[in-house]
Length: 395
Ligand SMILES: Nc1ncnc2c1ncn2[C@@H]1O[C@H](COP(=O)(O)OP(=O)(O)OP(=O)(O)O)[C@@H](O)[C@H]1O
Image 1 (spheres, rainbow, N blue to C red):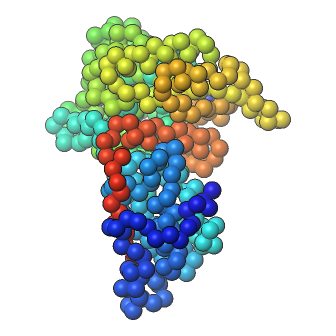
Image 2: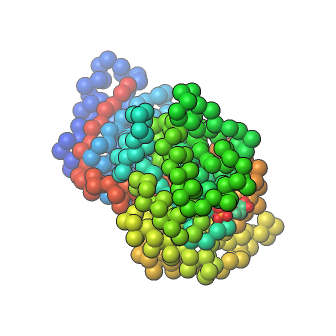
């Protein structure tokens, strides 16, 4: 995978101070903790040349700072600034570097996320960098389950994340986060403190009123309840706030999409024809209010038999792929119909937090990286600029 990265050609970036020079300058002081300049060159070249779906123009961009430290004779620690959460991808690069150098290489991403449409909470000075709406045209496709798991997955990738449950008519987030018996409190009588599950901040109408009361609300009432939830919650400084939108594409959804400074939207669907038609309406709705759609997550795409490993496509096959092509958007990922996903959602557990390198967690984490990466690529103007790399070598 990394064959092409390990050529020893000198970097053509004039502003890159070579590790050899830096190594030379510190050599006399700390001979035994000094990093081998060959190792450092291999790491630098690998990162400079690294390309992926999420980093078509390279992982070291204009703001990148690369720091290469030797932790012990056999461990090299590398920190680099990244424009969106992608720790899982850095871990994969680290594995390849470790095997190439026969030393343990640890890659640590320092987040430098540019806000696309920053939301400032009135009176608190706190900012939410990016609000992402998660929507589905049709109910029951697993939108809330996917929102919760993607929020945990973004956290596992390194981001600070919150969830706002805008599914006023059927708030399921409290149950999915294991917070159904909790009530928010307020320290100043003005703002509600969001509830937390494994560090994920959450607010839902389900924390405040009885489920049955909310289901009879009409449009304006639902809309004002939603505004209160967003504006009267004392969110921390968040990188991403995911909004679990009510299912459908009617007036309520349209009003919500217009009222909130949503940076982008993600559409969840199953591969069934009927769900896909409705998901298409979701794409059209966001187009209408000029909110970029980052792509489609196909949920319940396939089921893998626990006994023989056979994959069956219970709800049809390739629907999400066709839909993404039709709407000229991205298929952000496909998730299995899986009993653990259902069990976690019903019992308020999170396999992603408890086993962040497990198979299901890796699937959600990859989609989370695709979402954050697409937001960066589609909406951030700096993404195409030439790298200006600062490299420091610490001994
Ligand atoms: N990938 C999956 N594998 C197994 N079960 C799933 C999966 N995704 C969702 N589910 C289950 O499907 C049911 C519906 O999911 P969920 O409530 O997330 O759907 P929704 O689209 O948000 O529904 P609504 O539109 O009614 O709010 C839940 O019981 C959930 O546990």
